[in-house]
Length: 411
Image (cartoon, helix red, strand yellow):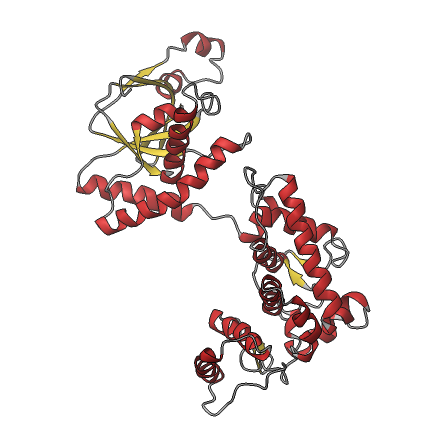
C-alpha cells in the first residue's frame, strides 16, 4: 500500500520551521505514519510512551467508530529519510484578477501538492495517541467491513515538518514537541465540566447544578476556577469541581448499558437518578444538611464560622459521598441512615479534629482524607479488627499525638 502519496498542501513558515498543512485519510495514516520515533534521549522514556499509547488508543478508536460528531485537531508529523517533491499551483489568472490584494510570489509558494515516492519515513511528533487510535479503528473496521463505511470519508488534518535524523535534528524536534505542549494551555477542569459532551459525569453535573431542587438553579454552586471553596464564601454550598467529583464517585455504582456510549441519553438519565437519590438521602438524613436544605433554619454564614462544619466544605461532602457508596454497595445503607447523626462532623468535638480540621483550618491532604474515611468505618464497627493497629498508628502520626487513642465506636 505504500506507493506514491500525493497530498494537497498549504505551505507556511513560523520562525525557522517550514511546515505543510494537509489532509490524510485513515488508510493513509495507517500505512504511512509511525506512532513512535526514538527522538527521546532514553529508551526507557520511549517505552513509557508506548505503555500510555496502549491505554489511550482503545478509547480513541471507540470514539472514532461510535461518534458521528468526532473531530480532532491537527497531528504534527516529522518526515525524514527522503525529501518529498513540492509542486506549487499556477494561480496566475486568480492573481491577475485580484492583483490589488494578492501577492504573486505568496500564491506560488503557499499552495500546491506534496508528492511522496515511498522512500520517506513519517512519525508523529504531536498526536501519537490520535495516530494510534486512528490506526486501531481502521484495523478493526477493515476486518469487519473491508469497504470501511465509517472512516472512508474522514479526512484528518496533518501538519508536516522536516526532521533531520541526527543528534542535532533530534534535539530540534524534541524542542518542537516541548514548545507545542508547553505553550498549549490545558483546558481548566471547570471549563471541561462546562463544555464536555462525552464525559457522562460532566453532563450530569451540569444537569444537577441547573435542575436540582436543592441548589436553586445553580445559585448555591460556585463556578470558581479552584478545586477548593474559598474559606470566606458564604454564598455557595460548594463549587462545580467538587460537585463533579461527587458525581464521578457515584458513577462507579452503576454500569453503562452494554453496546451504548456513556453519553447516550438513557445512561445520562440513569446516572442523574443515582445522584438525585444520593442528594435526597444526604440532605434528608444528616442533621446539618437537613437544617440548611430542608428546614432552612441555618445560614451559610453560620455554617462557615471557623470552618467547623466539615460537611459544608468540599472534603466533607466527598467524605459523606464515599461513606454512602460504601454502605450502599454492602447492603448496609439502613445502618448508615439510622446512625449517621451519632457521628459528629462538627469541629473541634468531632473525631476528625486534627485529621480534617486544625484550629479553624482544613487539612485536605490525601492521607488525611483516607484516614477520615477509615475512622468512619471503624466508628461504625465495620472496620476489620486486624487493621486497627495500623489505623491507630496513622491516627497518632497525623494528629502528632503519640498518646491519643482511637475514638469510641458509635456501634
